[in-house]
Image 1 (cartoon, rainbow, N blue to C red):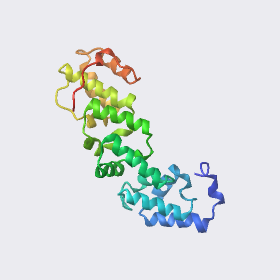
Image 2: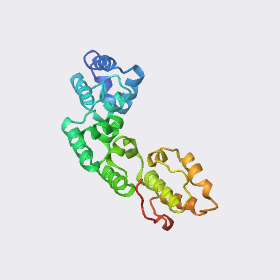
Image 3: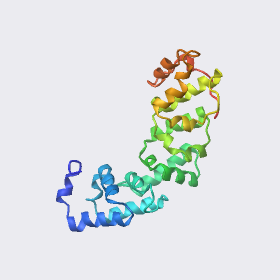
Image 4: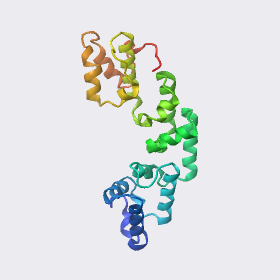
Length: 226
């Protein structure tokens, strides 16, 4: 932490560092939690204690109570973001994903890193999930971690594979898109690529190509809503 925040050595230990540590402990964070938080936000211990209290208040207004499992993760994106910027991002999320106030609150609580995700990345995922995959806004709001995955490396290639399998009668039992996205790469390949080497010998190569951001002609099929 000293490497990332040299100001720690020059900060008043009794007036700044210790009060911040004590306050974070009062918020339900253990020593390990505080250490992890400070690795991500090195200035957490060296900033004005009133500012740290403001960060906590902001996290609470987002619906994340002190001591909850996601409290530390929520402090990371709200640290050093003004309330105005947070409000602007929440409004953008509502418009982009067609969320209600309740839905954007759910999404922010479940995946606080949304507040740090670029507008361009959010717009790209919104267009893909709402219009190509065809899921409902509420579906995304309750599974917002899906927005943290790569479009080229995971979201689109896996969707293309599943659509190809469905179109060719190879998918079998209905699969939920979110559960497919959440599979590890190894498990996804074992479940959806390897079993079809004879019926679709090109699938392995096509999937690898899709993961590079290119769309194989074999995947150029009409989308179906999930």
